[in-house]
Structure formats: structure tokens, C-alpha cells
Length: 380
Image (cartoon, rainbow, N blue to C red; front, side):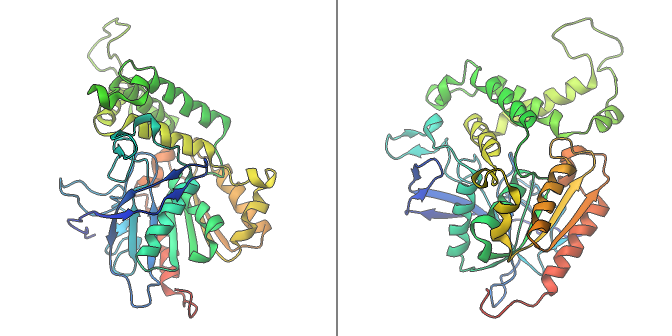
């Protein structure tokens, strides 16, 4: 299928402070974003795509360096999210390191990089920032909000904070909150970063260094959780890196070790350590049922005007199908229209980024339904 070709990112500046869940405010911030397709005359065909941990606004097409968007297999002309039908928006969240205001930018109050002083962000804060951008684009109601993993949490949060400003929520490989095990993985990864001597309490920019050792380990830990155990065995098994054992406690002996080190090295060259801390904390904090005594059904009662698609993957042990089914039950308890697909795929959590034909068929079918539905007069 055709790709979108070269896509130029845009920036939108906001002078009005953004109130945050922490009680702080983020002033004078910029959001980087991309759009694909054409907004129709009644502005009713817009779809917002929310990104996960290490992704960005670059959802589809090619950037200036020729890199494909992270969901290019899903978004584009003739693809499941068809840009010949929909106007698709990808936004980089505040606190990220891909153009929107974040820890690497200058704190106007000090004249130095924000570093560790950048205010902690939550999923709800990001949704509020996205809502402002969508409003500036002249869109009063989105056809859909779509996201996978942490992006799926943002899509869910849209239905709780702005239920009247979207018609459909598509949440893929996500959860209503993190399990204790998931929080534990995040904490070990954060400790790896803050324990790096080059971290300097989060103000490493002032020292001209990067805590790459910590970032490498954090990425290796995270990457293990994204893959299914059987898929790792099939792909790597106990295959050796060299022809024979080297009998070394510090060298690379197995192919899986080599793969993880490669992923860690690559990640440490482009991702920001403070951003990693911020985004994993946002993952930890997301828990819409908390304000309702732990009752997820009560939390979703206000989303009764929306329709939902939930997709999970059988081998995703980080955000298991059981977690998606919790959301489905909460929606059903509220008599909210919801479709649910559980895909038998061997790829673990990363499956939501891949071109599984069954998964893409579900997405295509759902977006075709969205495209065909009549829009109530005045809704957009």
C-alpha cells in the first residue's frame, strides 16, 4: 500500500498555563504534531492518535531523515486507518523528547534546562494538552481517539474527561491501571537511570554528559517485557553469539544478550533519561477507578455517549487480555456499546505495532464503520 511520503511536523505554542494534576502549572509550552489526510467540510472526520512510551507525533509517512512513522503499517492511504477518509492527528506529549516542551528545554524561570525540575505529568495532563490543540485546529468533536499501550490509556482518559468531544474510543493492548509487577519493572528501570553516575540528579545537561549506561539497562528491562517468552525462545533460543563459549562473566555469550544490548545501545542514543522517568511515572499513576473507590464501572459511567473498541493479544503478559476484559466489563455494566477482539498472536505486547492480518482486519472493519456512520447535526 502507498505511504504518505514526506511529512513535515508542525508546532503549536500555548501561552495560557496548563493546570496539572500535581497542582503545578506548565506555562509557555509548545506541542509538536503532524497531520495526515484532509479535514472534511464539517470537520467530523478527525482521528487523534496517542503515542506510547518511546514514540512521538511521527505516526505515519516519512520524516526528513527517511524514517517511517511508528504506526505507518496502520495509518495511511488505503490502510486500516485510511487517510483518504480520515484526518489523522499525531501529537507529541509535554515532557517527551521529540519536540514538545520537556526536560531538555529551557525553564524560563531559571534560564537553564528544566532537567529534573520539569513538572511531573499524568495521562490526564496529556489529554488536557491534546484537547487544547484539537480545539485550536477548529475540531469540536473527534470521530475517534486511538492509542496502544500507554496511548490506549490516553484514549480511555479522553472518554472520562471529554466524553462529548469524541464519538469512538479505540484502545489497543492497554489496561485500566498497572499491576504491582508492572510498577516494579518501571521502578527497576528508573533506578538504573538515577544510579548512573552521569545522571547528576537529572541535571546532566549542565555537565555535557548523558546517563547512557542507565538508559541502556532501562531499555533492556523494558524490552524483555514487550516480548513473549515463546517468541524469544523461537527467535533466539540458546543460540550462542560465537562458535563456542567464551567462559566470560561480562562478555556476550548468547544471541539474546547481543540483541538486548543492541536495543539498549540504540535507545540510549536518541531517548532522554528524564523523559523516561516522567513517562513511566505517568504509567504508574493512571488509575481512573481510584477516585471512585476502586469501582471501574462507576468511573466509566460518564462515558455513556461514546462507543468503544478494545483489542488485546493472547501472549501480551505486560497488558494481558484479562486487563482489557476488565474494561469491557465496566463498559457493559454501564450499557455502553463496546466491541472486543482478542487476537491470538505470538509477539507479546509489541503485537500492537505489527502487521498481523487479523488485527488489521479488526481495525479496518471498525474504522469503516466509523466512516460510514451519520454524524448528528451540530456534533462536529
